[in-house]
Length: 60
Image (cartoon, rainbow, N blue to C red; front, side, top):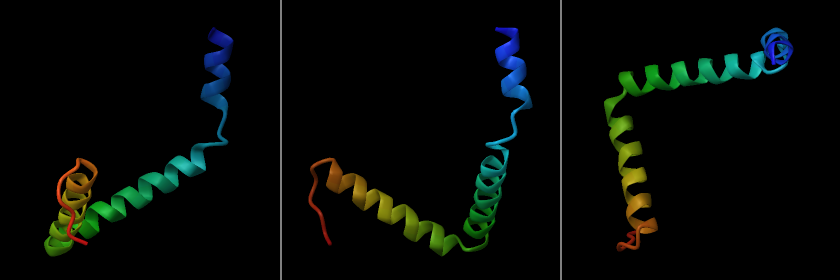
């Protein structure tokens, strides 16, 4: 078990992907904080999608 954990700790293959995901997430947070109307619009899209998927009336 210790060998498996040490090998996983030393592997760096997925490190680049995680760094890119963190960078994109940070940029998305900055954009959302800088543009509140955009945040509201995105929230509305997800609300409508949730209503449609939940069996409510859909306005497309």
